[in-house]
Length: 435
Image (cartoon, rainbow, N blue to C red):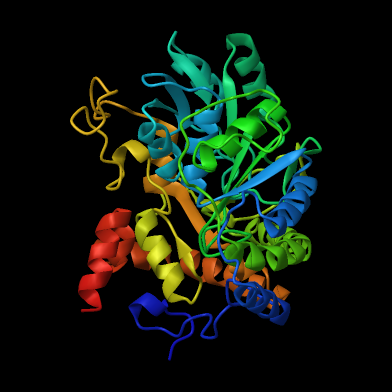
């Protein structure tokens, strides 16, 4: 086969062997799960359990917070955080447009109104100027998302929150073990929210974590998560509507090994991400995200770069670029996220969310839309936990596709297949293809 010809056009791919598997685990994880099974105590009550308390202490220490609590998933973590912070029906919560739908639907689920602000073009995280423009007399909270491999500018956002008396709820679903200006993810706002879903940097298959430095919030979170029961300290005497959001000890057993592995994997990802940035610097038509000096502990849920063909260049759409890169054996995505207000999964109207007076059909966040539909390329994090040769293969794949942009631009856009579709549409497409 022709090694110079794109694999999507029938050539030989850059890489045929798989990257490192994910999730990672140790034999000790299996032994620990067996121990929990044999104990016949599998659930999450009393909350937090003895095993969960041990894990929470380690998780809080890792992120520089006083308290941490487990919860069933990351979306519920945000809902519980908003409830604990006193957000009420009809209150407005500012969220980035470029994020996973759950950041916004968590607010909807407890009666709040998500208000979308745009993101910074160099970090894809919540833009402080856009947040300031979105504030109204009904605004009660800001939910920044530390996205992919960058942090929201927490200095600027905290200043805005302090000026307007707003709660700060950090969405740290991508930021396990990271730090900004020496402060850990989840330690810079009122409450931090983490996801432990299977793709995340720490995982129990599903699950979430909450962090805070404020005893009042810690007690409120326990009550919300633990069926309305009073917290174990109960110094503030809070009585809130509670639901059963507890995590099981079977998941905690997995997470103990995950937190043990995280520091080494985080360092390896950071080193390999730096190498990839160096390698991409010499390739035209692509741009690595600029460095963010305020990050004092880098962490990489994915590696993101921008597809930016030079003016006048014959170039295909980003979706076709990504499809071609994937055919070279490089696991990647373009529409990893869409602006939430355009997502197939965001079904928010006054008919099913009575706190809304209208739908989001007129919402427009141009940077988020450009990121989602024109320029972002997401390389999955497990490509960074193997060897330097793995990273060099990623760069070689990008270089090969870029070298063939003119040829690729002449192809039928349908070659992009599912890459040109929304996430729900893509799932239907893939099910149909596998039928």
